[in-house]
Length: 201
Length: 176
Image (cartoon, rainbow over all chains, first blue to last red; front, side, top):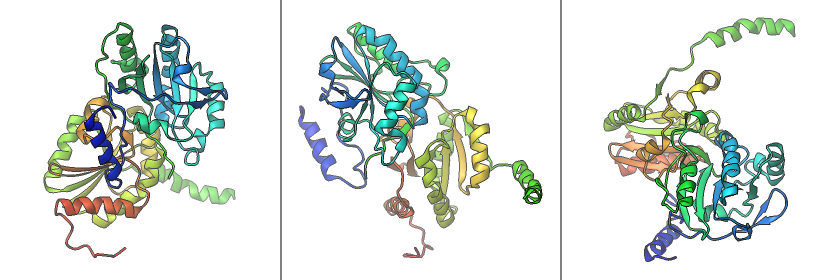
């Protein structure tokens, strides 16, 4: 709670469970994200601080089952291939409760990552505690962090889910390239259609 | 068995030839916005954003069908806005509508520039579907996730109707 206003927002959110209690307090651009420790599909626990040589991170909340996430799967692979060598690896996190969507269970994640040869970490937010902190609310939902874990971009990967060839604005790519030039990403916040995150009831 | 299949064949053929429910395809959100604003002046609108590929959306469609049967009138309208891609209208949406025979109005919003139109639907909407908005003039309420039951949807709808003072007079209280 850096700012009094955030504290107020937090209190407001805490006490307004019910009709308006959907949006937990979430990171906004400029906030420093809290590191996490989540299990990767290779069985190892992954924390951002433990990733060697990173200048920042492309954190993408995504999953197996969501058709929008599937449309972006190859683009996420390409993002990692392009930017991991430049210090910005993709960290994919599946936020969904597998009791609601079986396809998003850890064994299914392992299978998908193998089949599609994910070059990036694909982590399971099994406690469902990480995605609410980020304020992720759909899949796919991207967060670009700098090396101090300060959130620098939140939103869509690009502006055309259906047709990669018709993309006009590559939001995440542009954000990372801006950071590599030591500039501020513009835009630093976008919205997109996606699947709701399946939270435990 | 074969005989049964053969006797079913004309019915199946006929079903395939029957026109699917009519729907308008909006390429530009501005057109849909105009349509919604015009209708929303005199009518309370219950607008649901869904897609054939979205399982929780499909799960809750019967609730909207039921709400339409319960409340649709000159003063209350249900609109189901499909976000299926244009390329999926023929292979997915039309067969879906033929099968489901939904009673509320269906429209397709094919505007790919979601970042620009999502906040115009409701400033608090993040774009995840299903999402449902109640609209009456300038008043709007958002439900940014699936309704668990018809009662849930009913509560959302009636909270809004009470807020804008448009609870239908003829409704039998406690009929359900």
